[in-house]
Length: 280
Ligand SMILES: NC(=O)c1ccc[n+]([C@@H]2O[C@H](COP(=O)([O-])OP(=O)(O)OC[C@H]3O[C@@H](n4cnc5c(N)ncnc54)[C@H](O)[C@@H]3O)[C@@H](O)[C@H]2O)c1
Image (cartoon, rainbow, N blue to C red):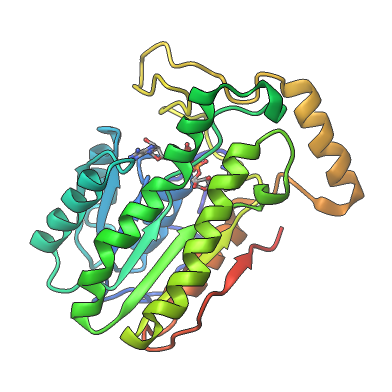
């Protein structure tokens, strides 16, 4: 990224490995903003063919911005990945754009609320699991037959260090589920030459979200800002941890680098259930 982390993404990234993704076809989910957008940005400059998936229409603007910056194609589709139907639609769309599918980056997720577990309602717990577990689960299921048919590929699931965090038990459960998908599916899919890996970022600075994490998600709407309603206590806790060496929030670059490291390996190298903690 050219711009300082947290200030947005524009122009050619400072570090580009030319043609790193040349000839490879890649799906990035949750690409309308944040980490997904940053990953798509880098891959576009490194010449990959992209299909960007998001529930927000903003994803089409992102695709428009990235089109032509590298040697690859950039297309976009809206889908709700909390449903299997949405995952299937995304794959069907990608199949109309790609000859083969090589890499799938399952990035949709994110804490909606942060508070002591005893204060979560049943509905909130359900929404957290739907947001941060099901999009990855459905996408892995929908993607796998394609990758197997192609003779291999790579699935990168975006997890989180929050499995060891506080005030986000449902999110931690969802991301623990993501880790479980990785370790189990990596073993199961290895003999198909399908690599399944994860990256587990810490707090990552990004521009203010256009798509809110809360139930009202539309840009321009009265999006709820339920995230960190008890910000003071929660943030203080994290700062105390940071002071003890847990070091968050961190910079965005290492997260991208870990995604790139996984996706950049030849897909023939099946590494098993490696879950990486990004350097922070
Ligand atoms: N931001 C962080 O500090 C951080 C830290 C650790 C892990 N992560 C993980 O990284 C990933 C990305 O985080 P982020 O902060 O960039 O997220 P974000 O909330 O900024 O963006 C998420 C994107 O996913 C899309 N999305 C949400 N639900 C969707 C659905 N059902 N179907 C399709 N698209 C949907 C949103 O529209 C949005 O564009 C998440 O999995 C998150 O858990 C983030």
